Image (tube, rainbow, N blue to C red; front, side, top):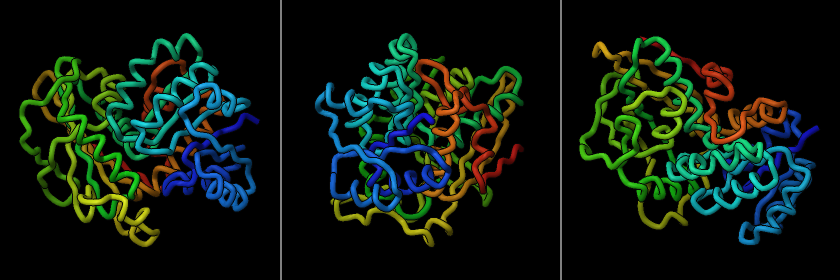
Length: 327
């Protein structure tokens, strides 16, 4: 059986993902920098562990020996994605991660040809974001003749994990971007958009998520914008190190996640759809594990890819608790 290495396995989402992967019957190795925390997790799950940082290219390559797929759960991904992607390319193995940081998607895109030559797949975004939105955009676009414009809005509810808060800083630092005529560029109009997640229209702020890259590849729609509606304690400020590691099960259960997509066709008609899932932190371990399982079983294409391209537009709906409504 091919082996999945989960890097950053002792983090908030990494631990849940490792447990899910183990319960799904995958052969896994938990990995990261902290030997003590890894030893505790490896003992709890009865799996192997590998302790290494990412500064030494040769050491990283050595630690990936015998691995079929790497799933990166270690944020901020601005620090971990590049060395792991390049190591996977050098070893000819597949790279997955759970980031929403747009610059990681741009990096994977830029390394796509190099990865393709090596037979390695780069598949960032196998959690929430971008699995639900990528599949939603493709499903909706299939119902629109000559789709020209895509707008996606995420609803982020409840407490954000400490790691996600740090990654959110990377997203904000990337600036406000949009895709115009297929080209990613600075967004000039920073006005909010209004979207209905099911309880009436609400104002959503523009923000640059990975869908600006993935949706372009998945749908070919030339004009794409991203927005987010924040409630609760999402996107906290101040000393992020003081935040709790992440929301507990009870909080996740009452804060489900939704996203809206709007596709405008050449005729000017706007077509809408909504997707709903369990809380994003509950969804990510399920989706990431299923993605890893499929890749380990041979579902892969070399180079930079998106969830909808590799697994099809129905992939998001294969995750328990997910629904989609076209309107």
